[in-house]
Image (cartoon, rainbow, N blue to C red; front, side, top):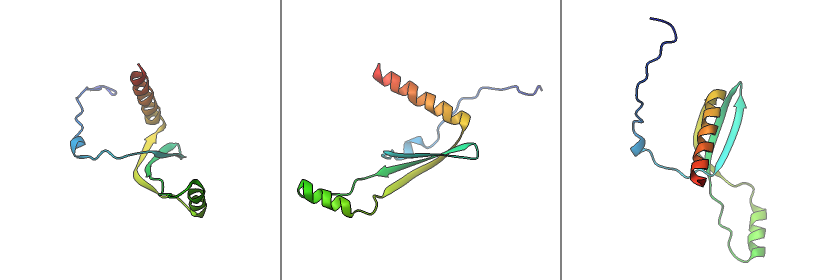
Length: 96
């Protein structure tokens, strides 16, 4: 058998129907020792009620806004480039 011989086998995404679809609207990408860590989160703005002035005052009193982390994913540079291309292709198809 020669080194580098490959065989194509279909891939099946097991359990995909059981996984919930989560809102993701906050992303943090960090590089660490040549790999990339993508943290995906849900940011839900706090309720600010009343007049515009009252809402502004309430916002000034906030010390932080919580982001609920829903996933942390690690990628090599090569895989990150593949994901970027996949997202760009999907966006272009959506625009067409």
